[in-house]
Length: 313
Length: 284
Image (cartoon, rainbow over all chains, first blue to last red; front, side):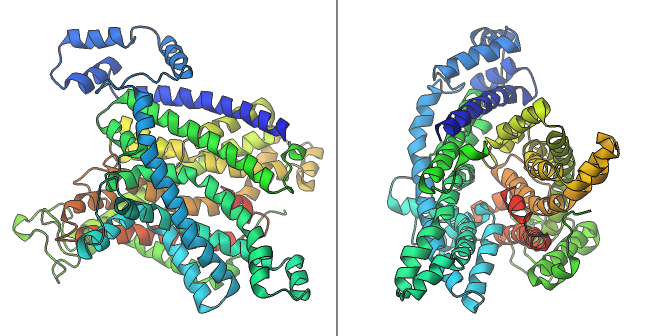
């Protein structure tokens, strides 16, 4: 186990090194001279040559690309992500300021998706091949295919504009959270429902379920203590892996609902061409995602004693 | 040959899969014959006929500039299917070749390719494509570039896994014993046996790519107006959500139907693969 964790940590550091390379070089995808691009972001279109040169000087753009990268990497390793090109705020501070809103939205969506998916999937597996089951399967297929930006707009239209039940955008109260979380949660619930269903069907075929029935245990106990407990393990792991989906989905959902999280910060920074902020956000998200995947894998091994990573590696 | 073969008869029994294929045919038809199907020029503005509801003249109504939404939606199939097919063609070829080489050769090359895969997949979901498209600037080719740069690893990972197990099979050993060259073995024995799962993954990937492309345009980083594209049509409809919801309804419906079609077809194809590959495809 410890060997496995050590090996994964080594691999992750290689990956994160690669992530910093990509994040840094992405800056150079923008057409034009970086100094000029930054100067435009800072001072607007009316520029003097002196202003551009001043930016080149202060941002260290005179030195070679390798030196610039190493300088940047050194700062990042000391958790200094630099300052926003536009507001001059500290980037890491700004990210950490936005993180709670994204975490709140992500956790609420995850919770909602499980709240929908586990009962729906279980019910569907118990009534396999009935009308109810088919309806569940079809709805989840439909749910996978609905783009969440459209779903969000439909929710706003129905719940905020027609029924006037909930606010269409904003942040702060529980009411504000409902629609964004529902938007992100339902499309996730679609996948999780399918997984719960197939996992339950698999477990219900196992001999220990037959044995429990033979012992004369009542169906409720069999369902909850024997079947569901085992069937939910892959479902929960999957939920953990969905963090990536959530982080990606928040970009869109936060933009629709004006939710002041990390995703909106990233999109806004792309539009204002605040490259330093874009770099910071992307790097932060990728590292967070990598570490959470590692945590899920380890947790999986701890929860399921049948899994032994060491043997395979 | 012991490869995974698609069972066409089984596919035909899967009603949802057949529905998916029929929808794909219909959508391709719309894309190919858009000029003949559209009642109006998708770019033609009639400012005295803004935000109209459905009528016989304008089946889906008109948008905020008095353009025919039906015509724009029909032309939109060209953009979305175009991006989907281009990106999937590029990424499936590049990703598969890398996967075959990586799995067959092993060693340092494999190590480098797989770390590359890990690095690209460390950016969750749409994030990397968003940044690349955002920095490159909007437009059709930049969307294709951004999505191609981010979607190839799924094929590489899938194919490499299959090659690792194919490599040990008797027919590969036999070919090697007959002194077949590595190139010959990869081309004649390894590659054909990976094709079916690549086709399945590619079909599902078209659905992904179409959603991602529409999402980029929805955020304003993809295809720009006035080009008729579903994602940017949705964005343009937001201010009129209350007074004219049909502006957002029809483009969204088209995205959903298209994605649904490829998902149905892909799921159906996957179910026709021999047992054993389906898990790997799922993971991809």
